[in-house]
Image (tube, rainbow, N blue to C red):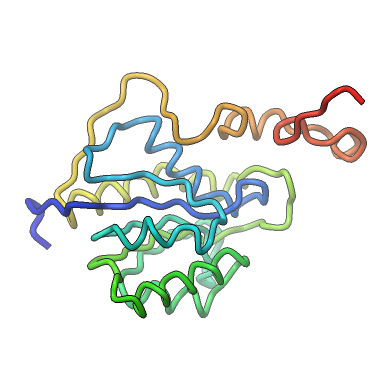
Length: 208
């Protein structure tokens, strides 16, 4: 595509669940981008979490979509893959790693049915290493790919849509401080404490 062209509406979507180890990769990549850059008005960064069909209105309004997620490509852990357009629903259908991807397949199907499929869809996916660690952060293998994946997103925005963000002076606001990657991963309670009193990073206890 012409690098000078700027689409009217571009959605950069991180999907996944930060509570399940490498499942949170997409959200953490967007957190990194939001902390380092401000994006021009045509671009929206969205923490899609596991919202499934609730994401439909955002996707219907977008002319271009960049998705960041952990996907089972059958590759060594930490391998980053790029897929585009028709290959995106195909790889999600064949290589699901979690229930949220089933929901996202439904969204893509509904977009096609309603005639609102974005003109360009690009997936930046990483091969996860660990998923079944509730309350755990990213593994070192997958965490090492946050910056490379973020650079790939920036390259896609520039090459595909002519978008170049500005360096940010200050903190981002996409992810709240309580579940930002650094405190979330360094303040994890022991298994004994989490079982006994709950995980204070995501639960608020009041006096009983």
